[in-house]
Length: 124
Image (cartoon, rainbow, N blue to C red; front, top):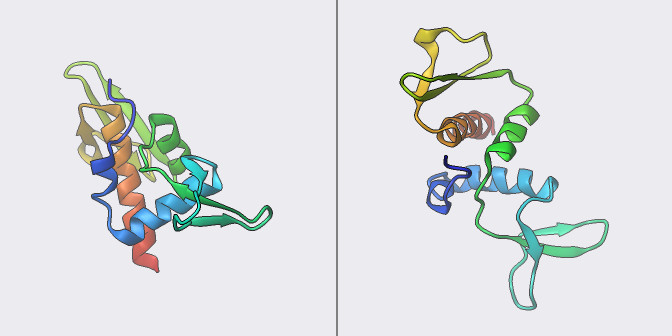
């Protein structure tokens, strides 16, 4: 079972969407490391004035669930054993005709995260 998205999948997002996700990761202390001298910092902790950069983001299944929960929207994840498919529906009780079926849980969650990022970046 796939446990996290790949770096290539992260870079499929546009620059604004990547920045949105990087900011969320930083505020949750995911994937940060100290900036080394001469390296441009992506984020600075205003309390400690410590500079951080982000490693390429490879969100795990749990982190994607946390991200989707933080958006404040309802989402449903369901699993069908035969054939082995995961599906997600956002905002309402799932109905079979509304579901997006995907073989890997990680990929189903990533699709939901991408849709949420698209919605957020369209508002700006």
